[in-house]
Image 1 (spheres, each protein chain N blue to C red):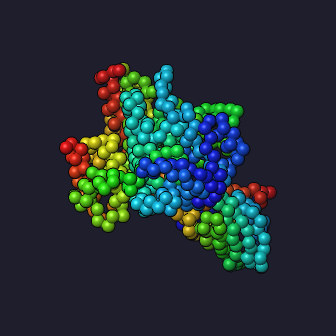
Image 2: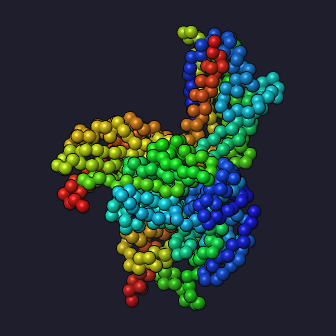
Length: 295
Length: 156
Length: 148
């Protein structure tokens, strides 16, 4: 790795001031699993690393008014094991559990995962389906973005130099809803997905027709994305093979995958169709159970 | 740029001056002479470098040494107490949980961390926890058996 | 990896050819190119800056016009560049063909790109996408530079 300055501020304002001072020559580091790996391969060479590890107040999981807030420093392992998330947003806890290995999840943080912006990552897909929003801080200011606006391209986000992800807010799903995360993983269990789909289904009170469905796709484009055309097909419909096929085809038409060692572009397109079908089926089943056993 | 870090490793305090780019693995091996942890892949995937940081297993090859400042690190060298091997180490020997041995330090550290959190894991729980510790020799059967045997010890 | 770019530039074939063979000038149509200067009659030295997220490449190397056949309206060029800090590089072989088209000239560029060393390890597919984007922007800039 290159020689770099290392700062370990104990307050968020201090970290933001250092990031502003160094501009795009500084990078924030928390778990370091992505950043240190890239630095060891000399792909990135920051002049200064600003460790966020000692900053208090960024590692909470809390809920108010139907919304969950995950602090940027919450580790994947903490999110995976959170009893609160497990009860109210199990699809999100499950998604964090699918990332890499326990070793990675002990270090990798929610904020770091978003800032890294590799479209093969798991949590952003589910967060996108859940309409999460990102709270961004910089010296002297803050702003909020929908997650869909946060990811710009491979490894590129809307973060400007000097900005940090502070927390993510995730609305809870309405009553009569179910959600699922399908990670199609033909290689090793700790790998990134070949295709990933997160789906939510909210049913009408009769438990038969869909009121609203959301489908987010991962590993099939430069960023995770919502399959809006496929979603539009779901409203007012009953679940059947025809609907699953139509939604799968619409989703397949929206993707732009790369050929790599996890599969050819053509294969990933076809698997998008298949996995959208599976994710919708699982989410629908979960929604039906929620209708039968209301909270 | 260097930094002086103070860390506890296997119960002993150390003050070490390290360049900021030093990985925790390199610090343990080169600065502290604890060569039990190995570098297998250098990208955090194979598990040969597994150590515990404040009791949590991590890949030390992609952790910076400065992350351990003020913290507790446990390596394979810290498992035995005086002349007595840790039950996990004894179980690996008795059940044949290693062949060439290169992955073994990582395996036993990871196994110890599992049994610390889940004293009586199922086979499925063992496999999920240990999935990031790769072994090219054993085919993993004896590793799982060794960990089950060590867990049985916990019952008696 | 190979790419093919095809476009219609709204100028006569002769004018497009002369423009393309002026390497320092046409080089400026490639986004991120810096300082192209002639080394001798058919070889040039220059730099290219490319970014993929946090990864910044600073490539330096040479461009050689290996063959130019004005009668057949066909040219071959070669680019070899390295990123010294990262220990990797690119080798590109380009074949250009000009054919008359309605209102102008159809330009076809076939590129064979090899990415070597560390850069190649990073993510061939991402590099391919980036190179594709670069070439498409080049063609767009070409059109603007030659617009009547």
